[in-house]
Length: 105
Image (cartoon, rainbow, N blue to C red; front, side, top):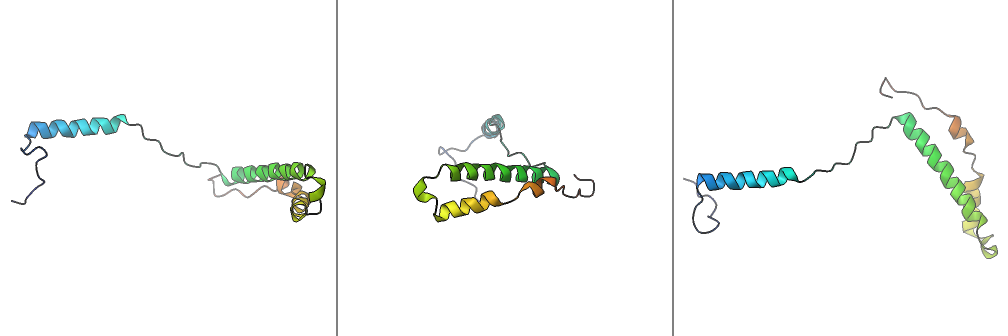
């Protein structure tokens, strides 16, 4: 016979003890809830719409940030970058509707 694992307490367990330990370990595992991250089930057009909305929100935040800059920072690189972001015309993105894909969207 192949040598098995050493007994836990110096004596071998009976089949009933082994079965009781197995059942106890499986009931504890079954009692623990398993949490899974939900799968992303948004379609491409929905993801596009969400991304455009997020860009518009970020552009508004950048405009508020630029408006709240102190006078000493109006000619800084930060102000220039914020002005470039605010000058972007994102209205064209709102009108674009991405193609639908093979009945999956």
